[in-house]
View 1: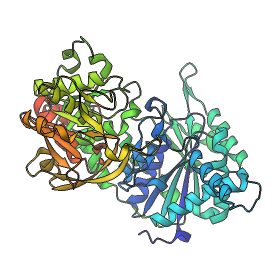
View 2 (view 1 turned 90 degrees about the vertical axis):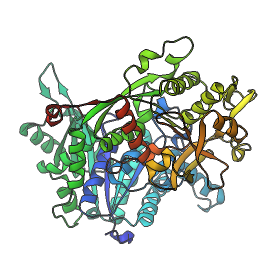
View 3 (view 1 turned 120 degrees about the horizontal axis):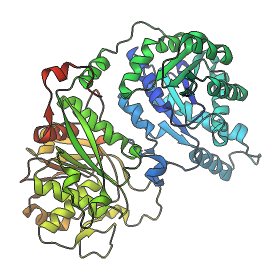
View 4 (view 1 turned 90 degrees about the horizontal axis):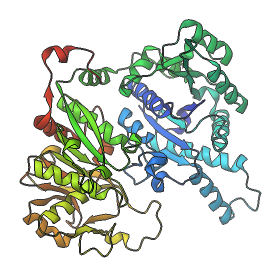
Length: 555
């Protein structure tokens, strides 16, 4: 129904208080799913107050994974939630940081756009922030734009964004905007009580900035009783029916349904003067039922370098779960730190009982020999293997060493290595700046007919997202093929290897791109679906009819 007219666009602003990581991204994505259920066109935008231009150069332990869009933006991981919940693509317009905003304003000042005037936070910075909203609304042509403000109310760096959305509501009209505030209602075990003071103080801070929330989403470990809900409404000036609870859950895909039961979508639509109606979430409900009642389970080892922060592999985790939906199997992720596999370490205990091994992407030499060891273990023991980005490169190194090239390595870690089976891409050789200069975004890949990848996709050509600087060295293709590792997917000109497979292995596929970024709960990625199915067949456990019917099976 999106009509493309910006002057009809409605806006939903999601802010957070008390502490970070309460789940604003999931809340925003869930609201997006609710709006789509009402046949509304939706676009989402994340404002990040940090001064980095983007997260592309940040350590995963600092920020979690870097999400990549089709048009090549390195963005916040919440964009992954947006896409998975709404099945709508994001773009470089969907994420803006303080670094981007100030950079744009400074560039205008250097050009003389401000005619010699003093450049200030208000109006120049806030105007630039508001312009990002207008640009996305115009480009997306959506009925509803959902805007998440990163950080918490009271953060110094977030104040320009909060001031900008306050102004924006006045600019476009208050009836076209809804302010939703996500806050914490902690349970104090010693007192046996839910405490509302953090929420009261958070809303007071927001109101001091000039924003009165229309809806509160209260993150809590226990359901809100009527008295607690009434107290929150009284002290925050929010209608009782607009105090919505968000009780902790182990399945994020259940959140849209929980919010729907409390009529959050109805509250939003009424406020925005949009048609309500029933809204169709039947497909989402069916997907959840398949997750709740799998036919069995399988353990899959994920061998990473940043396993201390699981958000570093957020899209991997979700894509495996989606593959489980397709295979009717619950996937149990076994985290393996790659450094634990190096040297004389006994690798067998790390992989005992797993149905599959996945080696994801990463940067830097730390833990590389452990990742190579994981690829070797999968190759030698016939365990289904999926390598992603660096996971392809370590599989290539292992295969080359097994073929007699004992000093095979990557030029990323040793520019003078004797057999550089992984080398720097030609287009990267003159790059001197780190940020935003890798091979980024969606590129086409042509698949070899009859290959495992082609069978999984059911297509001869696909488009996948990339984030890398190094590639398989074409000078070694023949030697690798002779050892059984064949290139089964490449760029249309044939110069860049995109997919490799071991021909003499039950299921061994590695890709240079990042398929996890395109997996959805309603549309599991074909490679993850095929990998999980192979892992389940190789080492899964089938539930009895009684187990499958039981609702106590963990999600």
